Length: 281
Image (cartoon, rainbow, N blue to C red; front, side, top):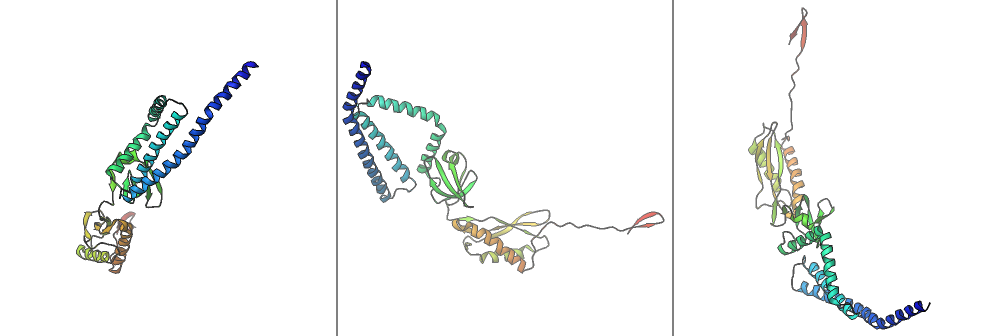
């Protein structure tokens, strides 16, 4: 019983001795986090006023916040009597262990840094990343968020995005819209070409410079395949795509030109019986 009382007394004495340090550490933590929040917000506004790329600002702001919080924790550890050298060594060991466990994730982080530095695409660009076509909504540290043309939210890991071919459809002012029309062999190409070109000129948002192209692409078994190539601004691509097909169909119908389709001719042979033998008519 005396041993228990002695232990409790020692514990109380230690708590009394640690209480000021603990209270001071909690006070410093609260004030420190408040100050870090203010510094982070100030840094973010300063970067915005400096004209820094909007894709980089969130990344740098979060990086500043993390560094300041780590320094704050080291300061608090020193206040409560923890040796900072041991604490730093512990953080290093934990960082190494976490790094080995999250090797793939760190690869995505490195790819995110490369994207922010070299800018193969930016927020708002129309891109094709590993078969995912859509507009870039956000470039995060580990992922790129894409809003596809059918209104889906697709999360592409940065390592996956940079491991293959990146197609940025917003790099240039306009895009070529690739369409195909099947023309019957019996129709005159020059006539059909003029009809299609006139129809394209009436489609809203089709660019007049460069002018649309209408040429023979190849000869199929049942028709002549025409390459119809109007141009459109990036944001108008799908309006021109569907509008051009609609206008071409209406123009061909107005001039009584049918779109070619496979046809088969079937010959029917009549047979009659003559003197017990079959005769073909």
